[in-house]
Length: 418
Picture 1 (cartoon, helix red, strand yellow):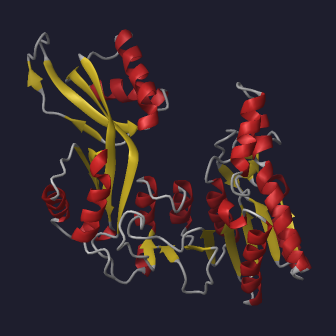
Picture 2 (cartoon, rainbow, N blue to C red):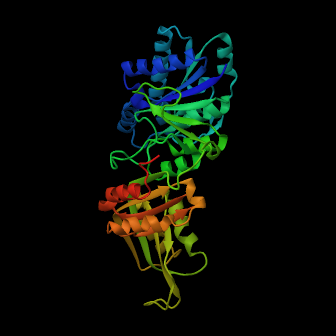
Picture 3 (cartoon, rainbow, N blue to C red):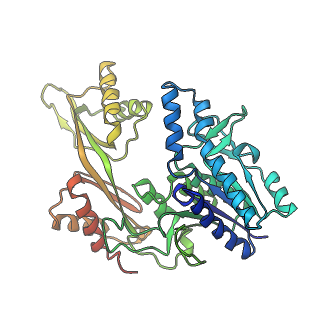
């Protein structure tokens, strides 16, 4: 039988009535002739409740017990979904991660997949079961302990199952009806996309779009798993939602497909750093060891004999998540105290935002950057930092101009038009 993977997020299974609604969508796919693997998240808010219990019990908790507790929400949802399907006369069975088994690394809280053997679930399908309801977000380590994959891990679970079982498609049901050209809450003319390429979706996800978890898109792109994002709360058919697919499946790509933003950014500048071979390693090595996620990096033109410095010096600017500024500052201060780097001052600006345009059409079009910068200049928005890739241009700007920048760029590239 053809096989489909369907994933339901926390808001889609938030209570018994929503679980019933999700079960009806599964029933419709079974009626179309599919065997179905359903991946479920915990009920909305349940994982946060479990995390609160752990932290209230032990501030310096054992990560293995943390995983044992916080993974329980998905187990409850899987059992309830299987029961609801059985009440609808659909042969269904629930599966916890260890029962499949979903084999992962031993990195508790952020485990990664090793493999997903098919034998146990295939055997149940052969017996006549039509649906396997699998608890997302979890697996089992070589030591036999429950592991979790980190927030958003159920999306990744769904894609991994689609790849392992050769599913025709992986449908991600959520509280939005697809992927939009930008956030409709900011730009009223935002348009739902019928299709978007893996690379574009990966960039949008990593740049702030919250529709899909980044790891899930990476996995889908690697294994060519066709993803469909659609709403749990609307009637759907085979043409609903947004299909995330290979670039070859898209007939004609617009130059820019979407505008993404992230308001939780900070800009940090090391003033008068020595300009010598290895200085970048001396800066970003300690930041990496401290777990700081550096994004945009700019090095200024070198100056000779600046102030008390007798050699060439430069300024180094980089962006980090705003909640990692203190960690980054300590890493730099410790590196200076240890003699690893020299600098005069570390300046932090925590009132910035990142705005990006993304599109695979940039590969074959010139003038995209100029058009973007002209649109921002027309709104009197100053650009602090610029970073580019083959299909992306990102800028750091003052946070107060973020929404204006998103709207201006959306209009500039005519994203409201198909």
